[in-house]
Image (cartoon, rainbow, N blue to C red; front, side, top):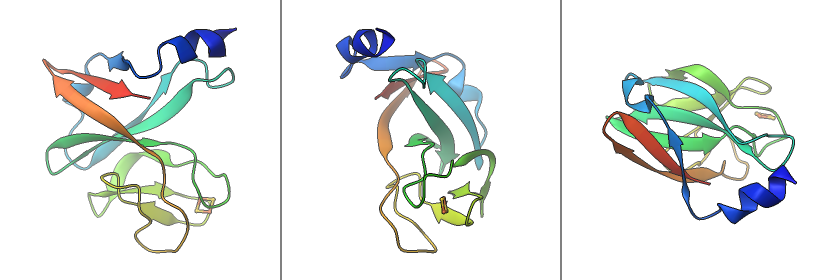
Length: 116
Ligand code: FES
């Protein structure tokens, strides 16, 4: 039921209050809806001053991209096989696999809107 409700909002942004406080080279995990019922978890990252969002599901072998300091200040990491992903594009930086899913983000007034 929640999945149906969430799908009604697809195409509309989810608001993440206070996301503007995320510091350069850092990331944090944010759940948008119930992840067991159609919601997603995103890794919100700040690189080159921009807020970016990656799905936390690793495209390699279903590991999870983790929050925390970004590798080299710019790559999100899945610790299962230590693959790094560029939050701007989702592309793997040190391996060959599919891209991680990225989401459009707009930052305004200290908050962020993420289109899932
Ligand atoms: S499952 Fe993420 S790097 Fe292998």
